[in-house]
View 1 (tube, one colour):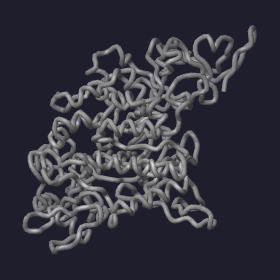
View 2 (cartoon, rainbow, N blue to C red):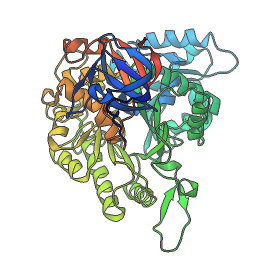
View 3 (cartoon, rainbow, N blue to C red):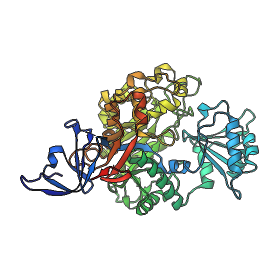
View 4 (cartoon, rainbow, N blue to C red):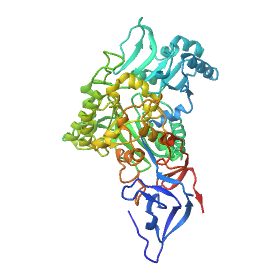
Length: 554
């Protein structure tokens, strides 16, 4: 796409933003002072706009403009729900939790559950007690969602509601009902054991999902986020309804979506597909719908596959034991042969693959699956991805680069949970944990993301964490993996766009690109690194239209 105003003539366009300090993200032209917009796209910079007549003209008043931020891995429905649930993020002792549970229980009607979010066991002085939670809740069931997303805690009443008693019973495949020395459930449910709660409380109504998306994307817009990929809907322990994508469509129709959205469908939401005898056995959505359908506002992304668990919960699959727990090296979330068959069947149905893999053993397994899928069926319609990468070896990064696989880590985990993660991993593996600089050195794609609400998701704080890599106590965490500010900004814009299949169409402010723009109160390259996360977001534009704040019009 392109145009040039004829000499001595003029071309009408929708808008020009003048008097700006534009950090384009384009290495061929890194700086500019004005941007032209037409039909939601950038049509030119600076002298390329000579002769253009805009319908509207905006004055950036010397402000800094960047490409809109792209969160390549978040959970928007879950995040939107947490904004309306009991927040336990500030709780530091079991007594704090009990008090907050009691306060919320006293304000509920009927037999409603007390649902809480933001609970971080690594920051607690001791474990929760199911009997104390029973007393605090006054007979109500309690469901506490851990920040990791890979565990939950229930009180005794809640356990009874989901059919978990004190008698012996087998653990669900890929999950654990944690028990004490007497064999009594403690209330802690790990991984797939959380489905026992969801089987009782889900699916959520579509209207509730839509409203959660509205709350989440309104917050995204306030932070300068213009695109989000939601990492798992419609199934598994991460989904909220088998009809979840319909809620995204309905939220769009209602005008609730403030950002562009791409949604991954979980592997277990795909069904067997009939076809010709010559077709490979495949799974997918009915009618053969697969990754890539949609448009620049709402799109179906890769299929989401959970291969292992959580570093915070010590369930991520490692090739060596955890430093704090000898004999434990985590586990895969299902039978490897069954997972392999399902993943290859999804690839046969033309689904791109996004594999959650935190431990290095899980990363090996995930790369083996991607490699085999590519040899059998070619590269998918969108890039294949490794989600998280809690521990990644150099040989695995080289393999990612060869296979064209993007790595999608969450640097904010370091600032929030780094001390606890380092204690679990030991010094050597900490240097290979949530890599960044070595991903770029290997020539692989690096995408910024939050995993929100597991960790705070403000993109400028993510940029700061990429640059500083310091734990909550201030200790360095793999300092050789630090990025420059420019590299961190690129990971959160063009890198994330490339990982989500939108490279060359967004993430850079250049002619023909989507006009997704964030206006900042300062230049992230010019402030001390510990102030990057505090920079004000003045305005956010999606397709040239303001979804937060405003630029001065003249």
